[in-house]
Length: 296
Image (cartoon, helix red, strand yellow):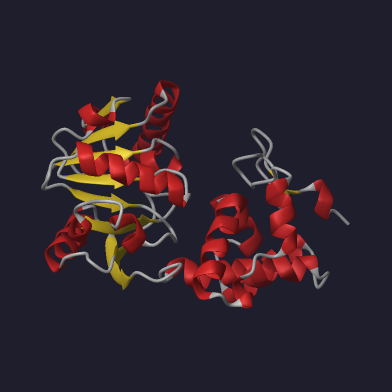
């Protein structure tokens, strides 16, 4: 397997393309927006420059990695020779179902179709195709070039052979793949999101402030980042979407999103991506600044 196609050139898509290209795969990075593709390539080059400065790659590897990526706005052309197609679009079921219906029609019959979804059912996605045995989840962690884990999610119909192939390919990326079954939130977000939600409830109920909550978890539990800062980093809209999937999937009120989270997303405060969440993120800011709504 040497030809990979990635659907979506946002944070996760360009990170996935970067990692595959750095490990000598031929990558087609596909997005309907040409400007988004240009921005993605700039991001990949900046991240490669960081690796270069740290001494983890040399100039030749940087040049070869960039040369291994071709960009496409035409999905048919982008997936024409793909052996593995990885969807990294927004965390929305209808969007993903439409993409997989299209990929099923346009991709070679032997191609494996993977989703980078962080919570949506692989079985449901696979049912939109005529090849459910070749549909699987590859949940990369952000930032993709740095984080070692890939959560490999088997749908109800995913074959043993496809699962084995994807585990092997993930290992070729110097990642650590972990196989899990297809239930709401899988493992990572079934455990992480309730913790983040509880941290937001702790703030909402006035138990402690943003910095206090994050400090307790960093110093007391040895977390590298507090749960509220992590929520900002993930995207508060993404956290809300995952919690809604968990709540709908299990029907348990413990997964109900905190009203504060709902209000923040409704107001457009989505964390780092919008410039404001539990913290403010100004251009060039070296320190996190509490958002105005959470200052004492």
